[in-house]
Image (spheres, rainbow, N blue to C red):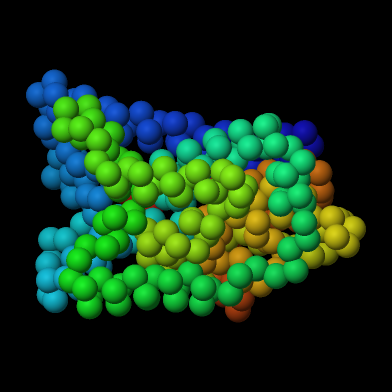
Length: 304
C-alpha cells in the first residue's frame, strides 16, 4: 500500500530531474559548439539536432503572420512540440521550461523566507478558476499587435527563448542582451507577490501550446466520491503554484500538468486526483496513470 501512495511523488522527482537536466542541456549546447561539435545547434526559439529541426509553435505562428505566408519547413519543425502538447498538455512548461524551473525555485525560497505571506496567498480559498478567455484573449491581443506593428513582439516575451539564447550568447562571448531584464523583472515581481501570473495568463509560449489541447489530452481528474477534504480545506489548491483548484471548472488552459496537486492528494487524501489520458466523456479509451514508468513509457512511445 505504501508503494501505491508514492507514484506521483516519484513522478515528480523525475520531473525535477528533467528540469535540472534541461538547464544543463542549454549550457551544454554552446559548450559543445565551442568544442567544434555542430550537429546540435540553437535555443528554445528553434533547435536542430542532427537532421531534426524543432521550432517553438508560438515563434512559428509569429513568423507566418509577419511574412504573411506559411513556410513549409518551419511548419514541419513544430510537429514535435505540437504532438507533445496535444497528447500531454503543457508539459514543456512543467518539465522543461527554464523560466518555470527558476520560478518554482523562487517560490520555494519565498516560502522559506516569508512563510506568513506565502501561506496567506496559497491558503486562501479558490472559489473558481480563471476563465480561459483571459489567457486566450491576451494571446490574441499579442498576435494582433504583432501583425499591425510588424514587429516580432513574441520574441521579446518568450521567456524560455530569451533565457536559452542568453545562456548561449554569454558562453559564446557575445555578451548579455537587454531582453534578459524583461525575464528578471517578471521573476522579481512574481517572487514579491508569490503569484505566478506570467505563466498563468501572459506567456505566449504556453498559451499557444494550450491551443492544441484536445478532450483526449492528459489532464488532472478529480473523483469527487473519493475526496474526503472538508469544505474550505483544499491541500491540492494550496500545492498548486498557479493557485488553481483541480476541483473547479476551467482548470485548463492554465494548468501545466506539473502534478504537484496529485502529490499532496496521495499523501494527505484518498487519491481523489489522478492523471487521465483519453476522452473526457462518452469515449471508450481512457488510461488512468498510476505510476511514473507508465507515464514515461507513453512519452517515449509518443516520441517514436
